[in-house]
Amino acid sequence: MNLSWMAWTTPTAIFFGLIACALITMTIWAVKAPQAPRVGVLRIETRPGDRLFISLLGSAFICLAWLGMFGSPVYGALIVCVVYAFAVFRWV
Image (tube, rainbow, N blue to C red):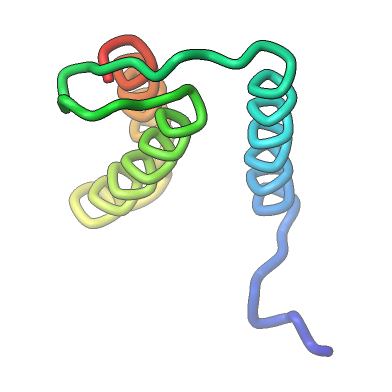
């Protein structure tokens, strides 16, 4: 199977490895200490796993918008994504 079209560089591998670690960590956390759903500013019930998903999805759109407006590198978008993820975990 030829995977050369996927551009598996070291940063890409680190990125997906960190997402995998986050998902594993959240799964272990949910099994060891289940949390009750919380209603935030979106007026929907969310658990930490839901907020992680919302953070990852929003971060993807932030990075795409950054690339469209400013191009590379996306270090500025990373800062915006961290602030966004903090806000999602705090208020959603």
